[in-house]
Length: 169
View 1 (cartoon, rainbow, N blue to C red):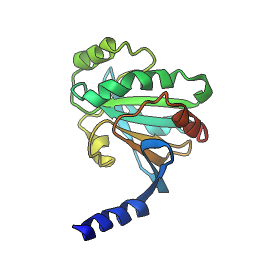
View 2: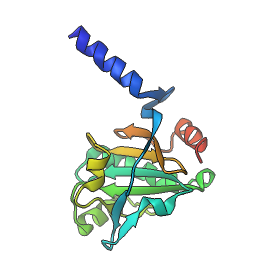
View 3: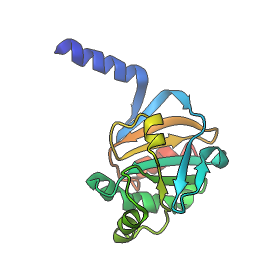
């Protein structure tokens, strides 16, 4: 058992570093590049992330049945309107296979006003990013490289998080 714990500790530390004072955020030691990151908007139109190069991107993977997703979505909505992060583009991508009505109701119930609905159908990005649970957020720098992940829910209005994210803006 101790060997397994040590192995997991060493594996985790060789993969990435966390951020002091912020939970659930893992910064990659090496940047990751992905080709052809495509998802759908609410009209079922394909969007490619390469069209948003030059922006700081936050991909948030969620589902309407996910309680932690519901908890963090209002702060994610407020983050999109943060004037200090003008170059930030947030894509909340539904991976719960919810239809447009169910996903829209989720946003309506939470009074989400600054975000649009996006979908991952047929769960292409979830597979490409090897998601292990939701919510998970992927942070992509201006050059299109993943530099960090957020596992689980966080308060996106946390000043420490906003200050940290501002370094990449």
